[in-house]
Amino acid sequence: MVPPPSRYALRLAAIVPAWNEAATVGPVVRALREGGAERVLVVDGGSRDGTPALAAEAGAEVIHEPRRGYGRACLAGLAALSPAPPDAVVFADADGADDPADLAALADALAGADLVVGSRVLGARTGRVERGALTPVQRWGNALACSLVRARWGVAWTDLGPFRAIRWDALQRLGMRDETWGWTVEMQARAAREGLRCAEVPVAYRRRRAGESTISGTLSGSARAGAKILWTVGALAAGAR
Image (cartoon, rainbow, N blue to C red; front, side, top):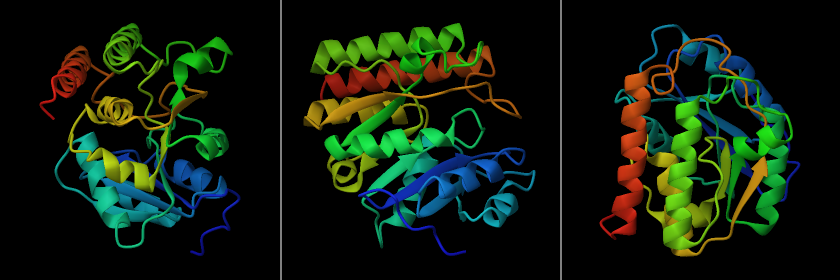
């Protein structure tokens, strides 16, 4: 399938980690392509429900990463892009909770920034977040992690939202390595530590359209993710990573 012409100053590629997201991955891929992503890479973590085939049918390049982990999926996607990198990379979830229409706001904000995070907190202030989409544990964990980053590096994030865009050259400076749930906060903490130009834009957010999250869907998953996020901030603040 021929990619649509870019409507932005930067050529965009999107990385979409996925695991058993057959009900939503196709619409997400199509929306990202229609929204201006020249390439969409779906990194599949061993789905058993036909996710890879449906992603390819929608126009995605499918990368197989058998080892589970959000960060591993993102790293596998970046490795696949490396031979012919885009100007900027968009990260989005496959569960349909993000609104791909917000891609335009992320891309436009890159005109004056290196990293742009889609903030669900800012989106909630404008009534764009569905009731119950963000659990109390998620809200508390986001607020705590962001406050720690601000206290250590002075960058005032409001959210660790997964829908984000970053310039390729800036991403190379960060040396990302987290393989699981610390990926988003690692990127934001490293960007703050490196003095990158950071920005947020309000985005919509809704309950996942199908399936169950391995993180926010269970108390144990939320606890493990929260612990990893806090450990990642602490390690970076101490200079251990």
